[in-house]
Length: 112
Image 1 (cartoon, rainbow, N blue to C red):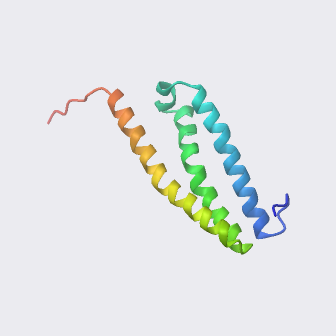
Image 2 (cartoon, rainbow, N blue to C red):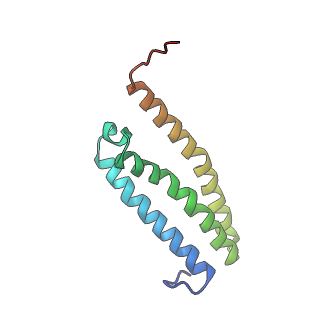
């Protein structure tokens, strides 16, 4: 059970999960509102895009740790599966973005 204090390790982990996922939701909404060209340019759009990828990497281990501390074996399995999804999905999305950005960059000539 999540409480809104910092008395126990579970409380601290719960806050980390809540804050990181809230940050992900806010960043995702902003990123979806702006067009792709804006979010791929350096600056706040790019930073928000990265926030949407980093926050699950922070939240999932905390969720697993909470489930282990509360001895919820069913949730541990669920959160491990979620962690596996994050481990696969985040690098794929990063590569997809890199390819999209490289298509928009002008070709540079190398002179020796």
